[in-house]
Image (cartoon, rainbow, N blue to C red; front, side, top):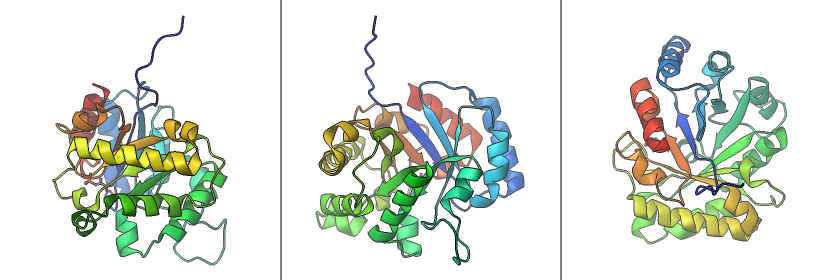
Length: 260
Ligand code: PEP
């Protein structure tokens, strides 16, 4: 007999380590996480996104677990004279399953545009990587009442030309820029409202069936103590976590709280 699954999408929590953790520090963190979290955890997908330099080691340390490896950036070309860049096949070769694309720090500090984000999303999908596409408004944009317009532009630009897609292969992250690293998260009701808008736009771009399959994370000052306010909402399918993913106790607690 089929059982009723109240959650149509498997929750996904990703830790974005940003530019933190040397290899030695990564080894300690993964060792502690493996002690605190079930490596064969069910009911939630865990993705660790360390800096490029830690990917081989972290990949080796979590081998045999159900946790996934993700990168924080990608280049769209397969190879070539692109000093300092990393290609999709290089990430695949290191065991990456996910890649963060269009994080607001990359848009703000490294000139990423909707067009380059779009190239990266396409390149990731073509290589078999699942993009975690970040969208979100700045404080000024929110105050001008432009949240929906900004998010819609980032989604339609980032997904331009993509029409054939399995929903599980794309994750969207609603990350209001003003909530990232500030300790001031978005209210859960507002995060769910914008996530609903994101799903509506995804439906227009990719079809309603695909949009229903896509996981939409919330990101911005998620911590143990507040993650459940987001993940308990049916329209929010997990979290993209920066600061609180850098410490084993907080990340493990946060995952347990997300599981409910
Ligand atoms: C992020 O970097 O995507 C993020 C959400 O950071 P923090 O959790 O530290 O706000």
